[in-house]
Length: 388
Image (tube, rainbow, N blue to C red; front, side, top):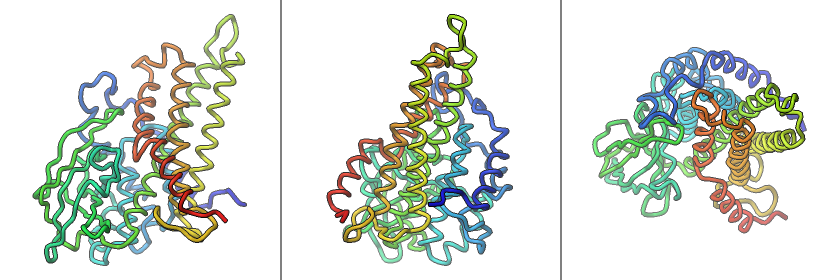
C-alpha cells in the first residue's frame, strides 16, 4: 500500500503552513481568566488569508472556483490549523459546502458555492442535537407545507453560529427521513442563545419555533446528513491529531531543558516511557484518521450508511469514522493530561499556552460524541454487519 500524499495534497499542507505560521495561540484572552467567551467572532483576518490562499475552496469543483481535492487534503489542512488553535470555521464551512455540492440542487449550488469558496459566505452545522448526547437529526422536526418546510426544535452548542451566515440544520420528518435545512442567521422563527465552550469560544443554542424554510433551501437527498456527519467527525479527528502533535512537541522541548539532579528530566526513564506512550497514541490517531478520510474520499467498495451495509466484507464507512473518533477522543485526552503532568506546575500557568491546548482538547474530545458514544455505535455496526 502507498501511504504517501499526492503533490496536490502536499501543496495544500505547504500553503496552510504558510498561512498558519504567523498565528499566535494566545491571540485572545485565556479561557481560564475570562468569564464569558474569549471573543465575539472568529478570526476574520485569518479567514481572509485562507480565502486568498484558496484554502476555503479545496474540496469544491473547479466549476465553483475550487481545487477539486478530497477529505484527506482537508484533514491535512485542519491538522495544521489545530497546531496554532486557529479560530476559524474551516471544518464546518467546508463540510457544509461540499455537502451542498454533492446533494444540493443546481440553483442552490450556483448561488452559494463560489461565494463560500471565496469566504464571502460562512456556513456552519448544527451537529450536537438538543443535549449533545442524542442524534442531531432527532432534535428538530420538519413538516412540509406546500413548498415550505416548517422546523421546530433545539440544537445546542452550534459552533461559530453567531458569525456564520447559514446554519445547516438536520431534521427528521414524520416518515423517518432526514433532511438538511439551510437556515440564515436571524431567520424569522429562530432564536440564537449564548453558550460558551470549554475552549472559551462562543457557541449558539439555536431554537426553531415554526421556522418556515423554502423548499429550495432544503436538501432532501438520502445520505446527505450521514455524509456530512462523517466528514465533520473525521475533520474533528484531524484537529485532535494536530493539537496532540503540537502538545507533545511542547512537552519534549520542556522536559529536554528542565533539569533535576543535574540531568534533563527527559532522560529519566519514567518521563521517557510516558512520552513514548503518548507518541504511540498519536500514531494510532493518525493511522485511523487516514483510514477514515480515505474511505470518505474514495467511497470504497462496500461503503454504506451507518444503518446498512453489504453482506460481508468491510464495515461501512461509519465504522472507520467511529474507530478514528474513539482514538482521537481518548488519545488527545491522554496526551494533554501527560503533558500537564510532565510540565509540573507550569502546565496550569496561564502565562503558558499549554492550558489553552488542554481546554481545546477537552472540547474536541466531546465534540460529535465522546469515545463511549462511538464505541456503542461501532458495537451496533459489528452486530449488524457480518464480516465474512
